[in-house]
Image (cartoon, rainbow over all chains, first blue to last red; front, side):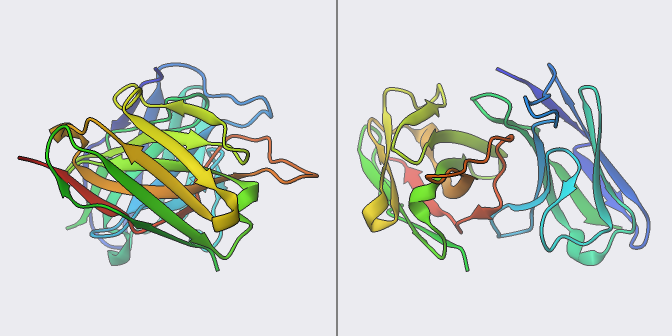
Length: 112
Length: 127
């Protein structure tokens, strides 16, 4: 199985400040179409997950442009340029190169 | 507007069975792969199983293989998860999610991702 290691697990951030979450894969996640098979999700308290980023760097419809995704080999990063109060929740990266699809452990973002 | 609604979650004893349903609307259900995920209390997300548009199973998670059966009824716009020999560790919220588009003419061939999720249904396995 592909192991996805996410860090940090906890991320306290002051509103207006940037935030960054990393995921590292145990193997290449490069799909046949040249894009990495990584997506990022935010699960707000009491809600189901919502898609933020797909194919490592493509912002999903309706997602604010303060969210961005990038990749470098087997390292993947989600960045929030200026954190807002509504960004609180748990962030997950997920690989879908092969089954079993696997998630990172989750990063809990909280407001300082 | 895409809508997914899970149902069927209840309290069941270990060794028991349960059938979860996911009712879909707002999109051509028969032209999308579908997937179940789950989340144990206070834990992270876990992929359970995926199915293609024709009802062929992509795969099951090892933890449920041989006990869970995924199926779909495209005429009824519904996805099902038959859960047998339930264990305490199967406790959690079960989410259905819409996967890739694959119609009669075109098929998305990129990596899978999940833009639409249901609100989930709670399964509790306890004596």
